[in-house]
Image (cartoon, rainbow, N blue to C red; front, side):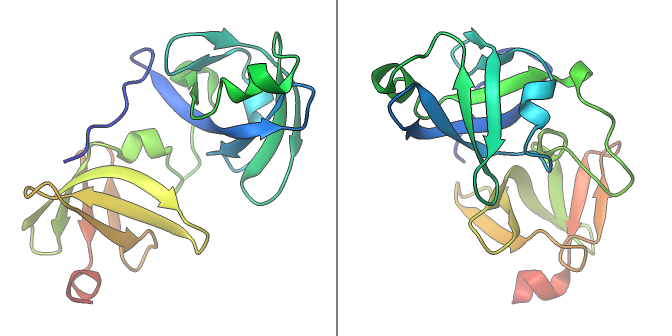
Length: 174
C-alpha cells in the first residue's frame, strides 16, 4: 500500500495543495479540499507538509475546486514555484464540526472498508476527485488500490466511531 504523506502535526487536516505558480507576482494556484473557496483564508496560518507556516494574504476562487492565493513572503514567480506540491494543513480545532452526513476526508482516511457481509476489503487511503465526482481509494492487502464512486449508493455506511465503512456488493462486483 502507498504510504500516506506525513502531516506536520497530529491533528492536521489537509485543506489544499499547491498546484503551480500563477502569474509573475508570487501567487500560487491551489487545489482546495473544502466546499467553500474562501475557507482556507479564514482559519489563520496554514502549515506546509515540511512544517513551514504561511499566512494567506489573498485568496480568490479560480475554477471548480481551485483557487489562486498569495502567501506572505512570496513575491515573485520563482518563490511561488518553490511551493509546488506542498500540502497545506490547519489544526483540526479551527474547523467547524461537520454537518450531518458530512465528513472531513481526514476522518475517513485509515478507516477499514468491508462489504455488506463484513468481509474485509482494505483500508481507506484517500478521497479523490478526478473531475467526475468524488472517488474513494481503498488500499488492499496486495498493495494495490481499488477505487469506488463516493456516493451513498456505493458507500451506504460510514461509521466514524466504529472506524469502518461499508462498500455495496453491486459496486464491488461492478
